[in-house]
Image (cartoon, rainbow, N blue to C red):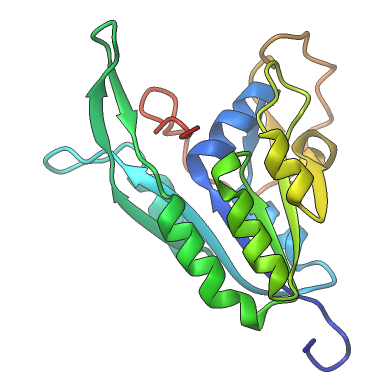
Length: 211
């Protein structure tokens, strides 16, 4: 049931590592304060979740400034320790899968929602989206097909009620930082004032999205 006045109840679920790689592929840096403002427009934003695995050393994680900032600025941050694994070439890779945590939270909160917005392209979420839809909740998935290769799994895109390409809504809550991978960068937009967020901590330590 919608809130009185017919305002749509929205839950925002952000797969942090997946969004990082998607935004990098398009050449954007996310302004998380502006993202909250965007999704609060005309809706009742029940909760905004951000999921990421943390690479912890003795006393420091490169993601900690971002997660601390998010936690103090309207986001519910869900974390767990990342694991370092060697690839076939012997290079260390960071692995951190937050699928279970995101799925549990979405299923628990869905009875209080009219609309779920999922920032991820991970095909493993297709069954989760289907389950939430059976509960009567509309699901929008945000990722991109404009990178090479596309960042969203086809099965997830087909299952969603609505697919939004990140590039289409990016001007609302991003800053262009890098040249998009695989194609020339368009002219930079005029700058606009934004609330400061921590410097990009993912560059060398981002958990890779799980296939």
